[in-house]
Image 1 (cartoon, one colour):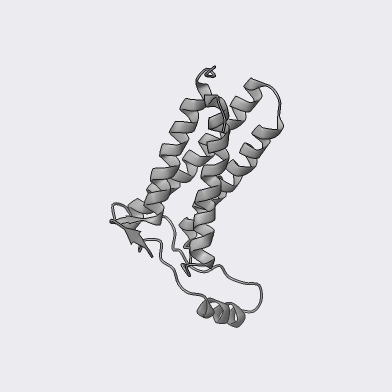
Image 2 (tube, helix red, strand yellow):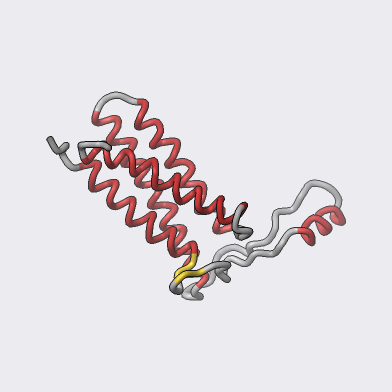
Amino acid sequence: MPRTTPALARWIALLLPLALLGGAIGSQFLGGLVPCEMCVWQRWPHLAAIVVALLAFAVRGRSAVTALVLLAAVLIAISGAIGVYHAGTEYHWWQGITACTAAPTQGSPMDMLTEALRRPIVRCDVPQWTMAGISLAGFNAIFSLGGAALIALLAIRRPVR
């Protein structure tokens, strides 16, 4: 277990997006939930944060590590901000900016129609799962924004000796 707060920040910057992305992918492939377009948007910053956090383990120098950890925190916060927007769309606080339709495939219009009919239509304004009234997008917003703030706070603190 890391003894310093910057080291702890580095571990959280890696493990938090791994857990959230793992949960999202697990809910899809093991839980049978089909992600909407906005759900997928939330995954990309987490994936980027994982890559950046891994780089923070590969570089030397406190300032380089801190910069990468802070960048990972920003990426995690971006996913959280998308989660806030998505949750607000689900709660009908505002209208979403996407139609949340299946992506077209290559080929003739009939092929595209056939493929679209095979795919489930998943709306971004209807949560597929909630717990205590909070959707998956809401949980992502809470954990991502809270985690990003914690990572940033720990990253800028002086090491504990």
